[in-house]
Amino acid sequence: MKMKKVVAMVSALAMAAGLCTSAAADEAATDSDLSEHVEITIGGINMGSSDTKEGWPNEVVQKLEDKFNVTLSLKTYDNESLNLDLSGGNTTDIVQVNDANIEGVVKGKHAVNLEDYKDIAPNIFSDNMNFRNELMKTYKSNGDDVQYFVTPRVTFDGAEANYGTVLNNGYIVRWDLYKEIGCPEINNDDDYIEALKKMKEIYPETEDGLPVYAMSAYNDSHLHAYFYKGCLAEGYINLEGGIYVQNVTTNELVPDLYDEGVEGDTPFWSGIKFYNKLYREGLLDPDCFITKSEDLKEKYNKGQYLGGSVNWYYGTYNENQRTADPETLKEYVTLPSYLGWGNEKNLGGWFGKYFFVSSHSENVERAVMILDYLQSEEFSRDIDSGVEGRWTTDDSGKPSLTADTVAMKTDGSRLDEWKASGIGEGDLSSMCGLDYYNVASDGGLIDLWYDEDMLDDSMTYAEKDMCSTLGIDIPSDTLKKRVEAGTSIDLGTGINAIQMGLPTTPKNIVRIDSNCEEITMSAIPSLVQAASDEEFEAAKADLIAQLKDAGAEESVEWWSNAWAEAKTTIEGMTK
Image 1 (cartoon, rainbow, N blue to C red):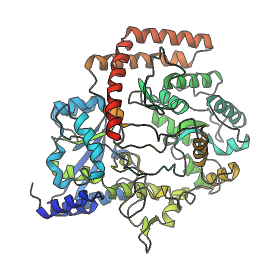
Image 2 (image 1 turned 60 degrees about the vertical axis):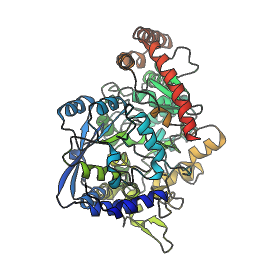
Image 3 (image 1 turned 180 degrees about the vertical axis):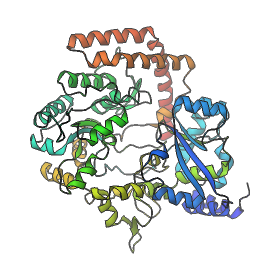
Image 4 (image 1 turned 135 degrees about the horizontal axis):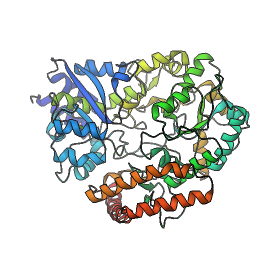
């Protein structure tokens, strides 16, 4: 690798000053030999494929491709296909894995040591990433004490709380129907179910004669549909598989499935009870147990659901309604649950998403440069706010979104243009190095949609009507007011880095946890479809007994001890 000394000097000076290093990255990219056009692929667990994405390559991707003289594509991996590619030595150039894959990747020497490429990776190794990098070296290298992985969405010290304009997680309602029933206050799951019942009474089927339901689970993310719903209701952060959860307020570990001796409802059991109540009220989609994410989006697009827990499944329903009528009230909006999924301080980056450059890549240096670019301020601004031109700076240097960009987001007739811009594209957004709330070197937020002056400008007609009706300024104020009143919490007190400080899970515990997950998934239909409280409790007792026989108590003991040690260590590192 031949890099000029001046590049290393510029990079070092930028890092020493604690500044974002996009300028150094630009110089490193320019100084490297990019004359040969190559193809770079990024593959990931549960990542979408670029072959199925509308508008690919979008503006953000095109800029990256031009900058590094590459063609970029994405590939979907599951554990089976990933292991097949790893064993065959033909993975994608950049790979995203979860914790369960770390040991195999490192032991199999499938990842390059990023520290060997510091001179072309100034963003990965900037001072702002030091804490994250130390976590990766200490806990994600199988004792090698070198850095193979990076995480996305790292929050820097000093980032201020910001809930954005709208909430992404909570109690979702169709605004037109919710307003028609008088906007009843929703403080818990029971209140929500009552509201859903009233909405279905006035809207039992769609305009096309299709049946309407409150909601459905999704079955291509294992237990997620159940424990995540419960996390929002009870105040927990989910660990990757949902078998254990983290109390947001105390940061203590709590067994989620095998809840013997735990006070109150754990997230999984809270979620299961919620779906059981929907079932008994005739509100649950009868296809609940065979529904996958794409099925969910299809039914949301057709208006067949009244509610939900997260906004990333309701497809293009809102945009389609605005296309037909710019002043429509027919939009899904989100009301706060007990836990508001906002203000998360990801000092170590997003847990459960680890990116590495494959040692099998035919273009390792180019892949390193692109991974480094994904970690940069420039790329994060691009994917969150659009490429330059979608936002501009005033005479004082303050950046802001253009009026046309704001209009493009809220105008349903410009949906194709919005997709082509690349703003907020889900998979790319999950690759960003910098979190939304970080301040860029130009003084503006990375995500300009979170700018104080922008929050109310980006609202749709229905969202403005929601604010007028509820007496608030922006939709997210519903959560902000509750957090200030102490009736809801956000993620501000959670320390997500504890999860990264856990040691590699022993094979016997992995086996036990996998068995417990499979046993639980098999038991879900009998729990959700229980016709009475007595039948529900009997089904739960049977599941708990099966989990105990599968070794759940041994797993609980290991996780509790490992968590206590990691919690002590990480809390010491963050002080």
